[in-house]
Length: 218
Length: 232
Image 1 (cartoon, chains in turn brown, cyan):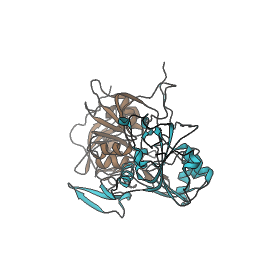
Image 2 (cartoon, chains in turn brown, green; image 1 turned 180 degrees about the vertical axis):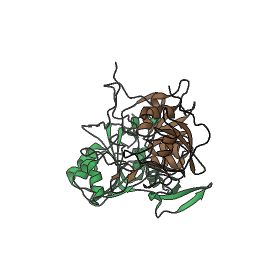
Image 3 (cartoon, each protein chain N blue to C red; image 1 turned 90 degrees about the vertical axis):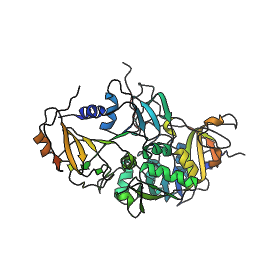
Image 4 (tube, one colour; image 1 turned 30 degrees about the horizontal axis):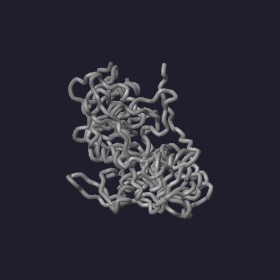
């Protein structure tokens, strides 16, 4: 089974040279720490920054330089800054090649829910609805089950949706799944996790074809 | 041409109960701290505030929420403010949550004379309820209308007496699009200079969008998530 870092490491393997990438808050942010050797990507932060670098050194933080998670960050050589409308022109106009974001639920038809629990938690969708509606390539980073052990990989989302039919790949603590023609397909198992364990943790329809390889992580 | 006013108190003259305001900023980055303080002092109520976020409990727009000066918030993400969440869940505060890109574009459209536009963001979700849906290139989009405000209040790094503005870092965010969408736009800046001192090639917001400008004081620029690396 993977921890959050493991999920981030596995997603980092999906990065391709030359891509512009938007990372959501939480596990997705960690992906930036595990970019494979020889791969150059630029991180887009939707509050208006392209070419985002690591956190600043102690004492060098700048209140006027944050990421979409409101964390202090730095600029890499070649970075650029822009307003929010331009930022979402990049996103809506499909100039960003990969979006990685978290989710509370994902369904086998590609629906995703991650912004609201009615009556209990309403934080807002931020940029997530724009991102999932427009990105061609979305990877969801999430835990396979909730704290009670109930599956978050569902036949149908129960929470208010963020986007419809948009998710194609999900990386969880247990598995890599792809959504093909309205069903989940098991692509890889996390180290030490059996196909049966993944099936038991998946409420949605899960297709398992042939031998399922174990993820290769450093 | 002289758009300079003395301070925040003078800048917000004419803002009265029930008006709609746009306030620039993303989180606490690039927010008009001086004008928010002046609004708290003045006690204007029943405000509709259009702002990406709602500040934190004791800073930014959170200060107006504490005093119950806001009737309605139009935002995209409000997760950092417990008082906001409490007022929203109890029904004391009206809230319109809209996708961040749609919020930015609705402000831009409002300032640019575009009454509405189609976007894919929010299709098939609560956001789309009651909105026209139309397919373009085989993909469904929803109709979003432009936003304008009685006053837009923005914060810039440098500005001149003509209202030309330059922003710094990610403090730019919503400020330029909101500056375009105010019937009256107030800019508070860290450094107010004479016309000619700013390089015209580097102006982010041309002065035509700004009606009042002043040099702010005592910027706290609070950091919401101080994340750093150790030098060792």
